[in-house]
Image 1: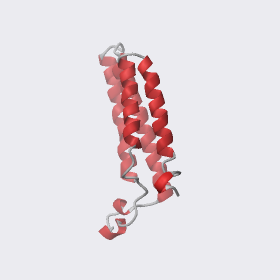
Image 2 (image 1 turned 180 degrees about the vertical axis):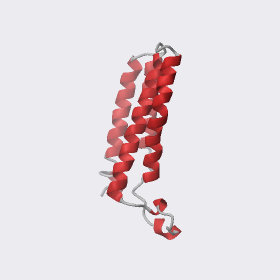
Image 3 (image 1 turned 60 degrees about the horizontal axis):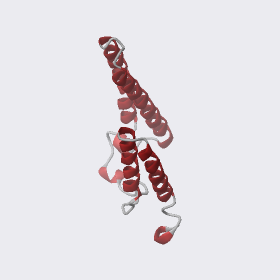
Image 4 (image 1 turned 90 degrees about the vertical axis):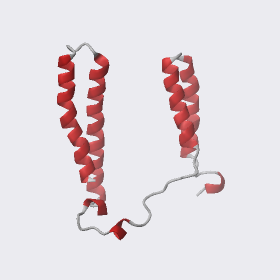
Length: 133
């Protein structure tokens, strides 16, 4: 994960001068782009920090070593639920929330309810029914 952490940390080094030049070129009057670029810097910093601390905790993966063999990456990679419909409902709730921001704020309340139901359903998916642990 060191390569990924350096890639995102390099984004901080790249996007900081870009944001400053953009702000200077627009006379610091176009706030959407300036704030967006500074948020991008923060996002790159957070992801780079997370990947770096995870790399320290997990250790070197086969993808990180030059002498690794293909069979070293075989086996279980994690727990995923391929039959879950809750991410689709959560995406519909997020899309409805953005629709509420664009059209009318009252729609956001509907989106909040849908998003809350989707989050609860996704979290407790393995606590009830056929796939309960």
